Image 1 (cartoon, helix red, strand yellow):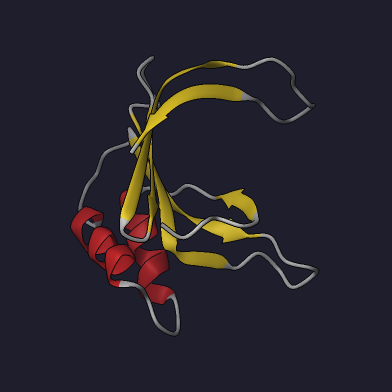
Image 2 (cartoon, rainbow, N blue to C red):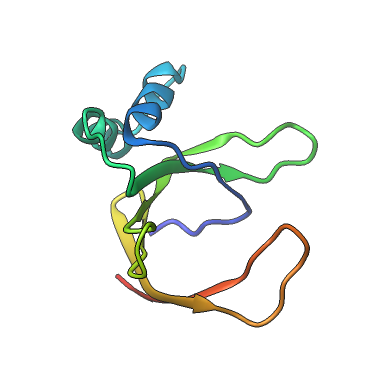
Length: 115
């Protein structure tokens, strides 16, 4: 698994919006990202959000990390689950609870993860 070096964040979209974002990218799109976008493109599920991770740069914007994306499911209930896809590897995160510390406009959460 390739390490995530500097992550700026992730912008989450509906399944269709995510598929449209991936389809609109220029250049090479990794198979894992393209295949997933095609599989979820027709899903109409408000409880499922998807987005590509964004890289932190030195004043050059926040480009997508094309082979890394995040899926947030069940966020409308008390059983939120996140799956982060890192190329060919996946990390599942669940059992969320608020974590200590906060900053205006930001929230900290704790979750248990597994591969």
